[in-house]
Image 1 (cartoon, rainbow, N blue to C red):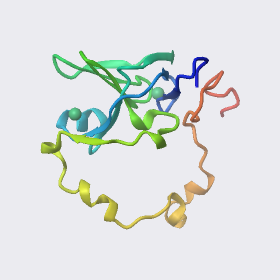
Image 2: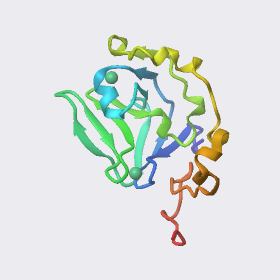
Image 3: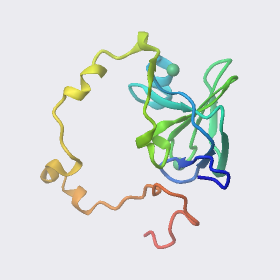
Image 4: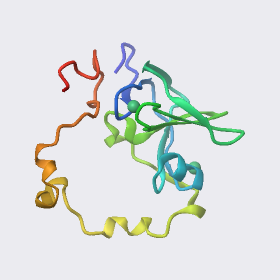
Length: 163
Ligand SMILES: [Zn+2]
Ligand SMILES: [Zn+2]
């Protein structure tokens, strides 16, 4: 919460070169299956939340932008590639999973369903394993050291002691 009781959200890219702060209520949360969102995210669909009615500040770095149409720009981290924004004339939306805590930002609608990939709806029915579920087939996982920026703001990143 901010001083005047407005909600505050933070987030950023995987490497930490780009960080954002949102103050105020988030708008509509959605996923978009359209072919442009598939390409821009490198994924089956792109979850976005509008920050149109809030104040968005880039607190470290700023996204690089690709103009994906005459109407919209796609922002991403130039260092690590994390998709971060969809910027249209009616406002900016942020990638939900880029938030430090995306758990409370639940999508309420799907857009672009004409391009929905045929297997997407079957994913929840697939066999499910935790990351360490088969550590014998990927033994490097047992000694994995994450270089991902932590899910909170940092004074300095990357840490000096990184080898
Ligand atoms: Zn990055
Ligand atoms: Zn889309």
